[in-house]
Image 1 (spheres, one colour):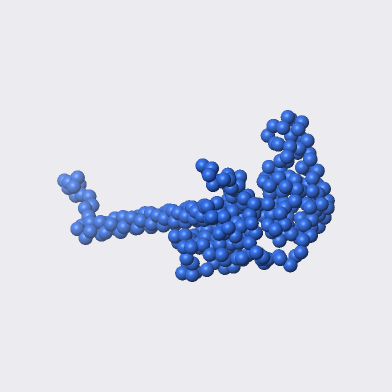
Image 2 (cartoon, helix red, strand yellow):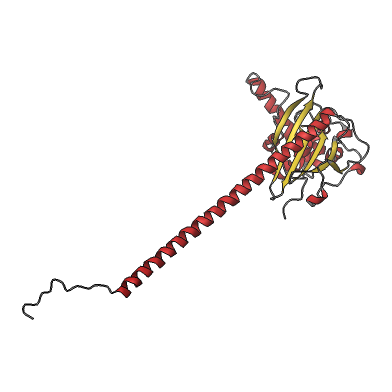
Amino acid sequence: MAGTDHRHRFWRPTRAGQRGLALVMVLWTAVILALVAGSVTRLSRGDLQLVRNVTDATHAELAADAGLRRALYEIAAAPGTWRTDGGIYGWRFGDAELRVEVSDELGRIDINQASEALLAGLFDAAGAADPERIAAATTAYREARRTEAARVGGTGLRPASAFSGVGDLGNVPGIAPELLEQIAPVVTVYTGRARPVLASAPPLVRLAMDATASTLQTPFSAPGRAMSQLTETPALLVTPPGAPVRGSGLYRIHAEALASGGAHFTREAVVALKSRAAPVPFEVRLWRPGPRRLFDLPK
């Protein structure tokens, strides 16, 4: 072995080995690229679905606002053409379905002005276990709020408006969320009247006033109709019992929209009509999202 040169003795891959190594690298690269592509695809699909959901929800909100404004136009520009005593109208707006209810606000019980006896009648009609006690607690809370407002000089709360909104009833001892949810649609803080107008009163208020229950109507809960059955012209879906009632000019408009993608939105407003000669022939007292009740709730 003496004299043998070992400086050039090292491993050199054959051509077949080189091709095999290159194939392995290509395969690993393809796997990595496939994983990256899959992740990007999943993220893109998620982003696309999010965009669709947001678009559908926005469409539902805009459609509900459009339905409310259509109702406001009808009752302001052409009084008497629309039922304002709880009639429910429905029509198609683009690829959304609209349902709108207009009711006279004076038919509701003003919780700032109602007597304890009327409040007790309301709680009793709503199924409260101890309506007299809850009514007494309500009037006590109301007077305490007024006294506090007078003590601080009337800042922040006018004496006539101990309740600034219907939700304030939730602060009264004995009014559970379930009871508040049931009476909220028939009470108000906007009329300033001690008693509601019977002709415009909803069924629960009629019971509270010990009126005849023969005119009570079944709550509206009809399933959504196929879009092909709807038109772009508002049609009366639910007709209140009795002859149309002349409105007072103070109305609550409840507008719901169901978009084609399933998104739902409710807009509720209380508006007071003014002279049509005024620059703006109405005044908005309330404008907020509302509860879903004109379409079947999801199963």
